[in-house]
Image (cartoon, one colour):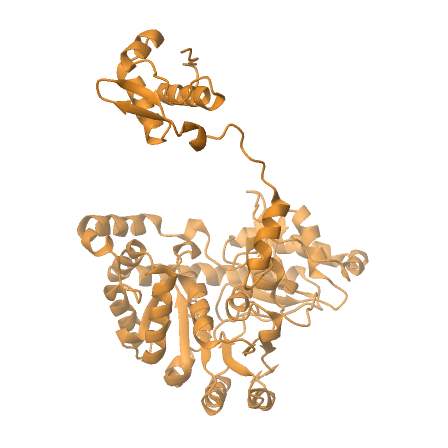
Length: 505
């Protein structure tokens, strides 16, 4: 049996032997039942250690290609020809589509479910895309020490199947934390989720049936739209006015009986950055109670307040009608995928059953590490730093917008959150502006990515989370120079939206 070995390759010798023998079997050179040379014979023939040949043979046996018998030797398996087809069948995408497409219960496409953005980003580019902390802000050293501690001291807690509602110690911390912030919560009203996205998906499965509709702001965060109302017929725009909720119009809408849920972001709405006034919060709670329509309160940006008074959550105003969701994503990093849901006990009990059938439980190592991070007061310390960093970046963006954007541009400086919403003159199409700015190394999200109805093309979301003040100034100056060219702005009207391939946050 001739085997060719190349010692200059980085591939280990035993793997080269295994692959060579496999090819001889696949090609039919070695037939089923044929005896192979002994490991001693082959090692002498190749001039290598016998243990190397033995490792290759063990790999072939594990793959079912050979069978070894003590005292008799190794033989090609009778099933080798079945296990290793001589020719790999060519993949036919059209045949796969014909087979699978009719079987989908709820066939979705990206534009309907979750708009996305291109995944690439040059190190030289300036990005206002992600409304989330950049990797350089993640407290990696402290978090790693907490993970080391958990792996050393709490391995028995995290190496077994956990409860679907979450790690008890983390829930206990969250209950105390919310209580300190003026929101009384008991541990049995909390469930730990794999981020806000899972929480909203579970709410939909529990409360939204065929033909039901949801009330939400338009524009809105695409992830919430995808999780709660993936089809366009389910979405009803929240009636708003400059001072807050249009109570009369919302009353009329809810009285029709079509709405089964209200989704709202009272603090630093994504993408507009607006906060719901106190009176609007009270009115919304009254209407929800009156018409028996639950509220999903998304407070993912709630801890990122830089100015203005702290307003009560809807959960604290009317806990019996509110499902409150949040996460650590905007505080630390979206990669954690760790969040929570707070709701009345009957809701939590049902969500527990749904979650158990979905994923059994959220990652226990991450839960325990996060709880240790909080127990050491590292989260509070980290958040104080993050508020200082993000406030400086917000102020740098506001100053740059005042300096470089045309006078007709309209924007409000948000009291918190990670983004600013800018409205340009009606002749501007920010989809085309985004294409032009990409060519100059500046990226942002056009407003069209956030509308689920009556798309407007003259707005844009600029997130200040992931760039320094200097880069923010440079990027806004580049955008301003594009907008200053009145002649080019007329080309913006009516241009198609760009292809998007990475989820929006």
